[in-house]
Length: 442
Image 1 (cartoon, rainbow, N blue to C red):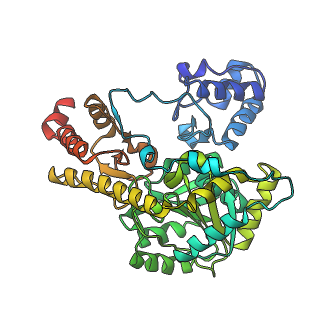
Image 2 (cartoon, rainbow, N blue to C red):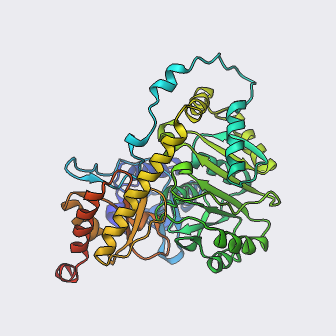
Image 3 (cartoon, helix red, strand yellow):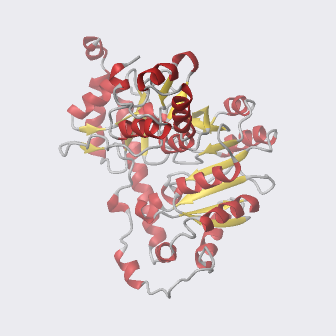
């Protein structure tokens, strides 16, 4: 038994024991992967019955904070759904290529649109979605060939994904996800008590054979990013869509959720695996990357049952997404020159991403980034590379939080990376990967 872990567990009731573990995790004294005492050992130490400890552990498992691993014991889960102390801030001297944010300079100014707003008061029992937002969203989905059955407005892409999953799945169900996948999706699945099943991907999205293998495990849902995949930049293309649809036809009961988080600034056209004949599906299109993360708004297109369940659950809690936010998004979407603004942002994001890929290629460094705001670079070992680059003035992210079975890599956000800086970063990364340097650290 690990005494350093054991000393943080106190209390004589199931609630007190579970609260002490949660507090230690929240305050950073316990971390992902830490092994907890056995039920019998902790019951002897705390002088309580084994049933009391088992009850405490069970409540934490049900909330996704603990995982039982048979003979390996009970451990803190890899992705506990608990707000913990923030990670160490990026030093001011470093270029922050770790956050995954869009470039603030490429987001539209909100002040002019806010000054034009003079909405009437919205009261209870009114429509959840503004009619103009409904019309504009429907037009956008139809233009991209995405089925438009029924629409709902949600509080961002992850909020939409969570609500769709919650409307159909229950704890213990399996969900097919890209590998690597957006860490937010993996964290969400963990918090909902769902099991992530990896699907290998390349630059064109999920590999058909890998998807079929995973679907045969009995998964209930598939979460996929059609373009600007985070962290690899993968994007669906027509031939891959046809191949994946052939695979999915044999599994009509599987719920499909598409996370189109980047929308018009993705750097790749929109394609979908969903069709109107499928029983359960949803496409979530967020305004965060194009208009700004703080707007917290996405539009969800889906089958009638799914959308009804999403809106029904909203009515029990949040009630609706603020009509002020909905009006602001409508105002921005219809603003004169907005289409050109978004095209310019997409073009600059593409130039910056491709500049880094070209610079890395000159050093013989393999990297991926077909679309979106990030580049994924396979490396032999993540921690040392991330540390070395930070010493050189570059903050990047270790790929561990995105990977399930994929080999090590780092994610570099290129949204604000100027081409001249990309050449310096590539040279520094090449030095970090040099065999002579790696061998000296062994």
